[in-house]
Amino acid sequence: QCDLTGWWENDLGSRMQVSAVDSQGNFTGEYHTAVSSAQKPIQPSPLVGSQHLDEDGQCTFGFTVNWKKFSDSTAVFVGQCFAGDDGDEVLQTSWLLREKVDSLPDDWRATR
Image (tube, rainbow, N blue to C red; front, side, top):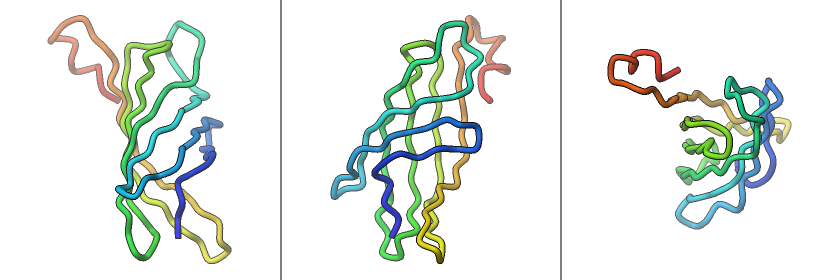
């Protein structure tokens, strides 16, 4: 059974800490990104998410990260937790990052 609680690290060295997941699947935590195009120094950022509690333990989940401490952007992540035969848990995720732009004509370049 996958348990999102704890520290996770991705291939680029970014890390996140998930606090306990409540009985409804809700959780909070902190994201420590290792990559940024912002001009300000990177700082840990709050995350809020929800996990689909599934009987087979290979749950889906999603969370939002507000980079408010150093950037005018927000990211959303969606994924699934996989429990391997060796007991290791792997989070497979996809993400979208929305950067602030100054006008509607610039909207085309705001989402990665």
